[in-house]
Structures are given as structure tokens and as C-alpha cells.
Image 1 (cartoon, helix red, strand yellow):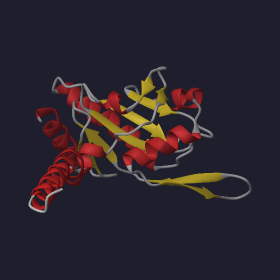
Image 2 (tube, one colour):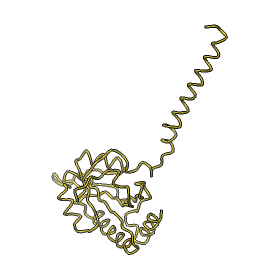
Image 3 (cartoon, helix red, strand yellow):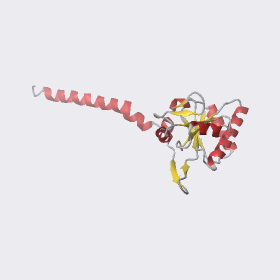
Image 4 (tube, helix red, strand yellow):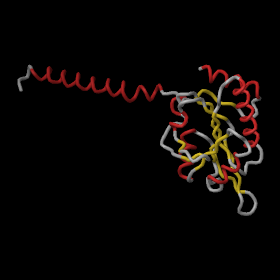
Length: 198
């Protein structure tokens, strides 16, 4: 190759490399840097089953606003309280012509079979129980970035320590904002009104 063409060839290869880097940045790196928690929370490859026999995946969160909280049927306080709160939220929204879907996903799949979950949520109309195999539940816990840990108690028994937030999702399946445990019906209802108005 003549010496005069070498700089031209090098310049062309540099242009190709820069174009490749620009495509990589625009298509892969930049979208990941700008993805918010709302874009990723609850997303992922998990498939659980609801107490009415339907699959529960990331797509389940789409279509209408939803509330999701994690708990377990042997929970002594947080879960029953949250279920009562959820019933009050649903009643408040129904009075305004809105229907709020509420899902309770177990953090204790070893004990919370579909039948056990179905019986547990039957006391709170409108709350749908969700369970699956330990691996499936672990995948969902990761997707929702929930804290859950088995805590041994006396004998061979155990309880579960877990996050107590209720996560609100908009009709596109994106995180809207959480409701804190014990936040109060008025503040929670304000958040739900904004969710339905969004």
C-alpha cells in the first residue's frame, strides 16, 4: 500500500470505530444509564400463579393501576393490617368510580401453597394472592427489589422478615410510588387519586 494511502485508511477505520461506539452508546449504554427505578421495578423473567389460577408476570401489571405488597399467611401483624388497609383503599377508590387491583405476593412459598393463599385472601375480597415455587418467588422478590429473609424461631419453626411497603403501579406497569406501612388512609388515598389521574 502506498505510504500516502495509509493515513486515509487509518482515518476511515477511526470513523468506523467512532460510528460503532456511537451506536453502542445510543442503543445500549445510554438507555441503561437513564432507566429509572420506575422503569425496571417489577420487570423481569418471573412467572407465578394467582389464587384465581391465572399466571402472574410483569405483563400482569399492565392495563390498569395495581397495588402490590409482599407478605405471608403466618404473618402476625403487618400483613393482616396491610390487607385491611387495601380493602379500605379499594372502597375509597370504588366510591370514586375506580377499580384498584391488589396483589399479595408471598415471601414464604414453602408454606403458602395456592390453596393456603386462596383461603387467606378470601377474608379480604378484592385482594388476589400470588405464589409459586421457591425459585419463582425468589425471582419475583429480586424483580421487585424486596427484602425477605427466613428467621428461625423456637423448635423447627420460622417466621419471615420482609419489606412492608405497598408498591403502586400505573397502567403501563411502571412504578408510580409506594405507600408506607401505616401511612394512613388519607395520604394513601391521595396517592391513589394521583395514580388514577396519571
